[in-house]
Length: 331
Image 1 (tube, one colour):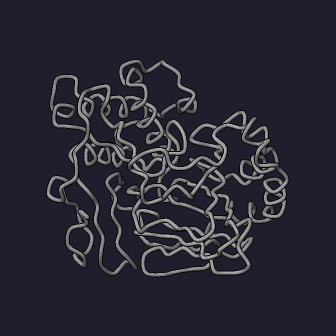
Image 2: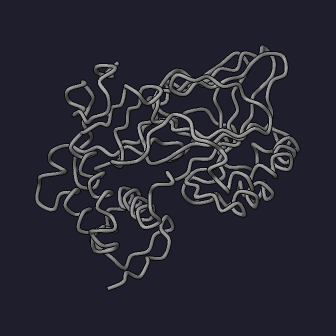
C-alpha cells in the first residue's frame, strides 16, 4: 500500500501523492510520529519526522527553529545535508528507489547522496570484525539467564511491539534493549560482557538489543523508512531443525550462528523462522551510515533530541542526556 510506481528509479515524491498522513502538527509535537517496532517508550523507532504545514510555515515554526539551531551549533556547511533532511521530512518528501539497486527502497526520513544498497560487506566494518570475536561470550551471557528471573529485574524484557505502526513485526518478535540512543543502566548491568564487547568494538551504534523470533513466525515485508541508519545482525542461537532466514531487497540469506550480516532496512525486507520448536536469537545493532560525517551524526542526534525536548532549539546551553558535549567549531 502506498508504494507508488515500481521500477521508476530513484527520486523524491510527496507523501500526499501516495495517500500517507503528513504528520501531527504543532510546534512541540512536530516529528513525534516514530514508526516501526516500538519496544518501550521510544525504542525501535524508524527515525521518521513529519509535521503539518502549520509546523513548517507558522511563526516560530519547527522547521525554521530547527535549522537555526543546527547552524548555530554545528555550522551551515557541516550540516547542510541534515538541514535538507529535516526540510524534506517536514515537507512530506519520500525517497523512492525501485530500479538497479537490488530491490525497492523507501525512506520518509533520509539524507540525500548516501550509497544505497540492500546488503553491505561485513568486512568493510572493522568494528564488526572485533565484535564478532565476542559472539560466543555474548551468546553464553544471554543463555545463562533464567527468563522468569530476568523479567523481574530487567527493563522491558522480551517485550513485543507496542504500537499499531509495528504490525509488520507481529507479536512474536520480541526484544531486550541495551541501548536506545542512551544505554539502559539496568539492562547493561545485567549484560556487562555484551555491553563491554559492543562498546570496545567502537561501533557507532544508535540502538543495541537482543531480538528473538519465535518458532513458525516471521516479520512481514516492510521498510523501516530511514536511509541514514544501517542494521547489523549477529546470530546467537539459530534453529537446527529448519531454516531461519531474512530477505533484504531481492536476496534471501539464512541465519548462521556467529556469522554477522549488515544491511539497509530502508529496503523492503522480511524474515521467517521456519522451525516448529526453536527460537532464533540475534544481537541487533542499528548504527550510523558510514558516509555520514561525525558532525552529521551529532547533528542528527540533536534533531531527535530536540523533537523530544523542543526547548533545546531556543536554549543553546541546555544539556540533554541524549547529546554528547558540543564540539567546538573552528572559526
